[in-house]
Length: 117
Length: 113
Image 1 (tube, each protein chain N blue to C red):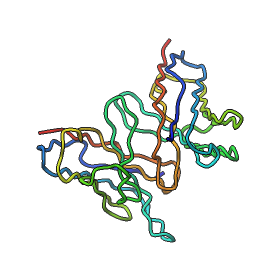
Image 2 (cartoon, chains in turn orange, red):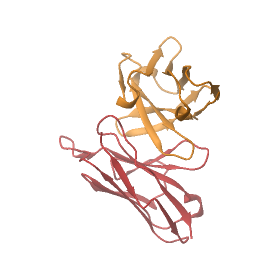
Image 3 (cartoon, rainbow over the protein chains, first blue to last red):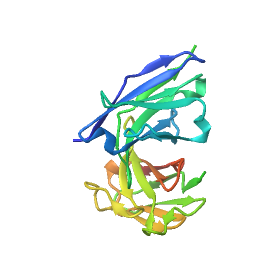
């Protein structure tokens, strides 16, 4: 069955970088895009971008351009989302999700990120 | 960016009654070459990731009860729960995947009256 397993919760200080991993299984890694979406506490969803694991190509939401980097390691079938220069309003649950032509059916469990000095 | 606006923000419905949630996009999400609306509906319960209920605006995802239905085209869409059950208490979101950024509505909280 399709699963996406993300890295665990993190506490970060303002100004540092965050790197979250997402390891899909149950399908061919390079067959589907991976999207990253975040949800601040008590808030809705914010789409951050996607990565094509086959080519490494990316598409970032303009809001995050220059601060986000999505990468993949095909040798271990894992994708990463790195967000730099963290601020307090970056505190959120970060999700990866498999992108299909009809939306995002499979989601990771979420990675809780706390930003605090 | 395509702005997605849901209404209402919350609603309380009696068990067994109908719940209707609306979603409006700031531009059409209908892709003419395949006549598909790139619009999905999600359900989120506390401390869980969202669950895809409906895709292509009106196609029910496998395993989703048939009391959930989606309708609409172009810029105006509706999610209907025909007979609300206790397990349907959740927040519901629409999302367009027509063009990046794949924006979400702000969410509609559904409760039992």
